Length: 191
Image (cartoon, helix red, strand yellow):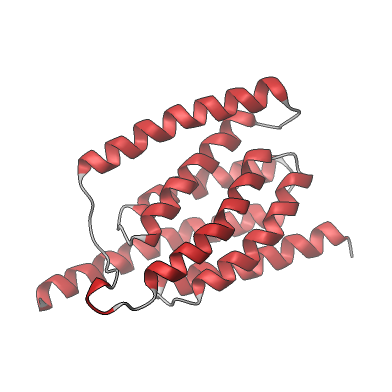
């Protein structure tokens, strides 16, 4: 069996465990996210998706940050919440500007494949990860869109298993949004 295929399967399985535990708000999701991200760093670099490779490097740090944020700290415990429209607009505008800048950089100074799509999914994934660590419900909306675009991006680079994982992530992101929204509503009703 090809080493790249083994790495892709390993990254997909650990990534799947990550998102299932994330939906359940299990703190160990971050451990699986770190492991999966390390595997994806090498896989994306080999596939000339450099922004994605950098993104997965970032995910390793997000994993440690998420674990720290979610660790029960009494009254400062992170709970599922909505964020303001102003925050969403600022994130969208920042994401668009950064995506264009990074896409342009990789387009003009590297052999990157699909540099603008790669940069866009990567930048918005960073933003969604920040939102996720703070348990902002709207993070799931970002993930739904990101995962949908990533299905095409990974398939385009012949990463069939990673592309299929994005299909599963897309479906689980919809479920995650509905699950977290219900949990937030129940928590508000019981407060």
